[in-house]
Length: 266
Image 1 (tube, rainbow, N blue to C red):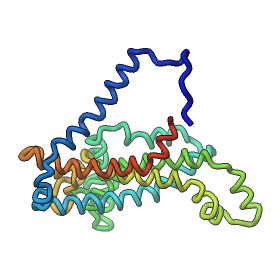
Image 2: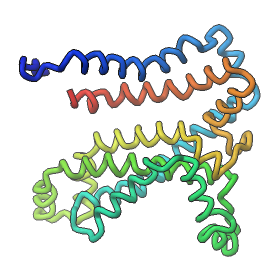
Image 3: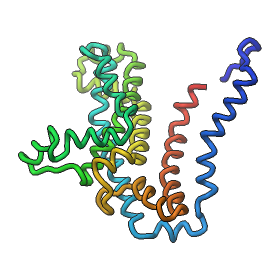
């Protein structure tokens, strides 16, 4: 139940006006996309060469990168939530780096490490014949880098909210650590896990800078929907707007699915 603001906490009129302006500033570009989209010939435009490949590449790579982010992020979030590891503040700061770095810089950083002449990339190429840049696997690596923090931050919050006495009680009854995680911990943090998964997938779907820098823009191979949208912008604004809508719709779906989580802030 939302509490009414008391007279002493009522917002100044200037704040109200600026708040409305800020909300409009955020909403109008989305509204502009919806109104500008060429809905009349949408099916014809979506059937053009390359669109289906870009959608498929985006969906596959976003799903794969989300899986990678969960595999890596959930254990890291658990360690950060425990508060017993040395350098926890430094590790948490490192987790936040992809959120603050320009995506272009993220891609250059990945190239410097995983490129054929990079510190790790040259070893992968020499020992296993594996080359990541400008491949579909490279897209997965790039978008995993930017999606991982969303899983870690969301899951750390979930782990911190747990009542640790429940896990201790299960251990007292004879459950091994793996069983405690499967039967007690994960079910309790399921809402956070779902939120982290949805946020990571949506972020992966929309990644542009790191992808084009590290994996390139090869149609049918590394060209994702954001890259196809960028190319369309140079020649056909209506096509770019329509492809933008394909990226906007999943974002709206994620917001709807997580409405209980963000409405809890009110």
